[in-house]
Image (tube, rainbow, N blue to C red; front, side, top):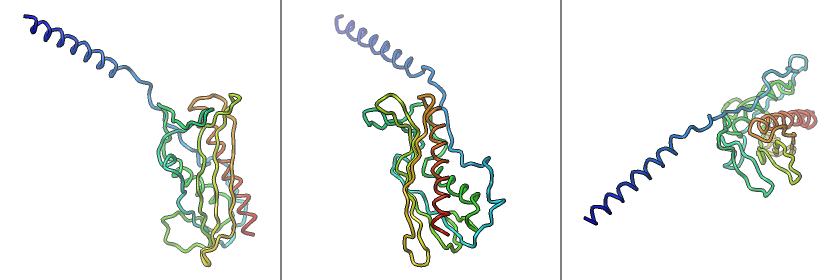
Length: 207
């Protein structure tokens, strides 16, 4: 009799535990929010008023750490711990998004006769290589936070295979609201600031 009571009690505890765990599983979670990096389609196109040179440039695939190869929206807290927003994602991985931003920006800049993607088989005079070092939301000790984008660029002469020039560019934009929405807005501004500075630099080194 006692064995049966013990078995019944154990079974009852199992059922209650299963019900509780199932209940937790089916709790309503916040919807996933997806954000994108704006490549600047709507910005004024200076290529319509600037005479292009005869130089053709090709953009190599943007390099970066594994963290920038995912769709995670990253933030770094005051203790320098890197984490990601739980219910927010980038539409595309940062290294791929920045690839598009570079192509669109350089094409609109009017600096070159053509801007070739990495997959092009056409011959280019110059190759632009880049590495993405920082791309996220950074919190400071004083409680403020910024969207940060940091990249290093290498301009390579395709004929000699030598580096013509290199430059590290960084932009930090204030985050208005310390959440994924505020972070992605600031990161977008930082990304466009970096590529805007890139155009100025390339205009200087390709004269």
